[in-house]
Each structure stands twice: as C-alpha cells, then as structure tokens.
Amino acid sequence: MANIKSAIKRVDIAERNRLRNKSYKSAVKTLTKKYLAAVSSYAASPSPELEQAVKLTQAAAYSKIDKAVKRGALHPNTGARKKSLIARTLKKHEAPRSAS
Image (cartoon, rainbow, N blue to C red; front, side):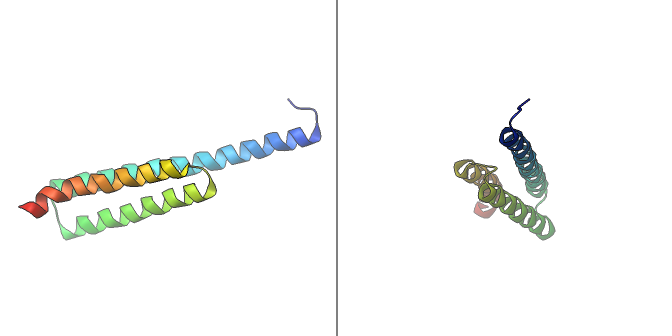
C-alpha cells in the first residue's frame, strides 16, 4: 500500500473509476443481450409489437454505448463495433422478410 498521501488518493480514484467503468460495460453487455433476445423472438414470429420492442431495446443499447464512450469507459472504435453488431443483427433478420 502506498504511504504518500497523493499516491493513496490516486489509488482511491483509480478504484472509483474502475467500478464506474465496470458498471457501464456491464450495462452495455446486458442491454446487448436483451436486444439480441428481442431480435431472435421477432425473427421467429414477426409482428408490429415485437418490432417496436426491438426498436426500443436498440435505442437503449445505442444510448448506453454512446454514454460509455463519452465517459471514457469504452474506446470509440469499440463503441462503433458494438453498435455495428447491433445494426447487422437486425438487418440480417429483416433482409429475407422484405425480399419475400
């Protein structure tokens, strides 16, 4: 453990930031999983209600990813990659439906 007062403060700040980053990353993972579950249920039986649920969960996930990037919990490229995954997933399930 550090003996110098400023070093002790830095340890406390680093721990606080680590917990905040962990909270953001965990929330992003949870919202992404909820979104993927909503997309799979929508793909199984498309309906306007399920489509609305997919759009709401997508908006929530995008919002949390953007906030995590803004706060520095996620690197900007990581945020873009996660948002791209979300968009690709829905597009993959929408493309065959619109073609038929």
